[in-house]
Amino acid sequence: MSREDRIRDAVDRFVARVRQETDARLQDLATELLQVARGDMRTSRVDIERAAVEVARAAASSGSHAGREFITNAMAAMRRMDGATSLRGVLDRLADCAITAVPRLAVLVVEGSKIRMYREHGFEPERLPVDLSLDSAPTLAAVVQTGQPGTVQASNGRPDSRLPAFLWVPQGALGLLSPLSVDRHVVAVVYAEGPGRPDGDAREPVWTEEIELLVRYGAARLEAVTSQRTVEVLSNSS
Image (cartoon, rainbow, N blue to C red; front, side, top):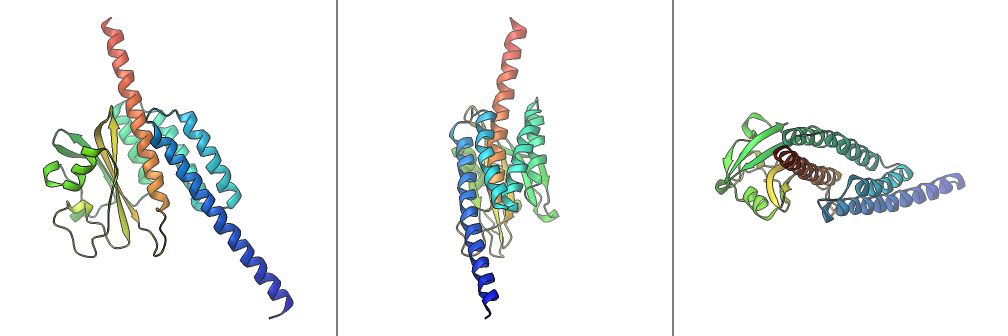
């Protein structure tokens, strides 16, 4: 190997190490942004945007396409949801924004002991989400009862009869169930499906963080819209 080749090889290895370390820091910042949103459903957009700015700076400095796309999509989606003034409007805008992050998405509304399909995107005809009872879908019921997100792993080529068809995750993919809570009651569940983790990578795929952030912010918007409606009703009755 010539002297020039050795120099070029040393520089390439150095740049690769820098990119790897920067991407890890970017992942840490993205996680911190999610923690801000998770910590308090009443978190203001100012608080979320402040954390987002740090992620944006890291993304810009690292040149990470995934990082830039994550923060750009998240910020645009939050602004879109801010313009919603009704419960249906929040759900529609949340769905419209989330659809850009994953190939398959379903928004399900909780009505007592039943789940109603509200919006869906990307499902094959045999996997279309349908209305069902919570008793027939323990995986969904657990998310509704606990208010905590859940994951659905790939079905290894054999559909699981215990799951509704739209939760039969194909090989190489991952399903994420995210609840939307208003006053600590789950009113809707977002099911998103996208690429799973690459072999040997323990980190969550970027799209799961984007969906979780959108759902958390959507829940905050639902809280705000519900509170505003309550204020309007009280004002009109006085």
